[in-house]
Length: 137
Image (tube, rainbow, N blue to C red; front, side):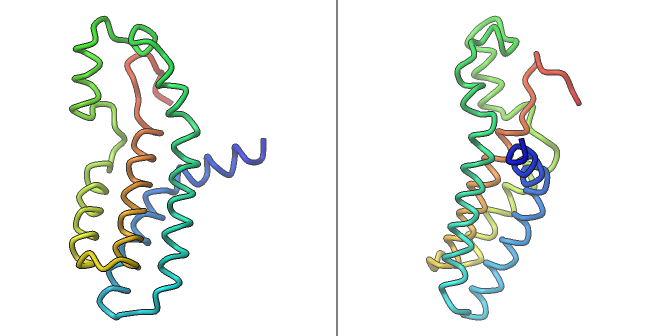
């Protein structure tokens, strides 16, 4: 039970964690900081992304389209393709993640943090996505 509370807290604070990671990646790339803290931060972000994604996403993927609130496959594909039901701030985080990857100049230890932050952004968005049958909290 305590693990579920920790994961919920991390999931609710994911946008802040992502923003700090992007700032650290860009600042590290511009200042040519030591590589090992950025590799460690990238691994931590990837583990957090995996934990946040595993929380709800696999269970939703096993549901049928009717259980998610769709009558036809076309409706479900349109919902997923156009990213409907995503949480507020998802598009801003996705834009910032793209900018962070570009601003790091694709130099690997710093870009690894930016790409790990992008993975956490995708996991957070999928975790917080609301389907038509789910109640708003």
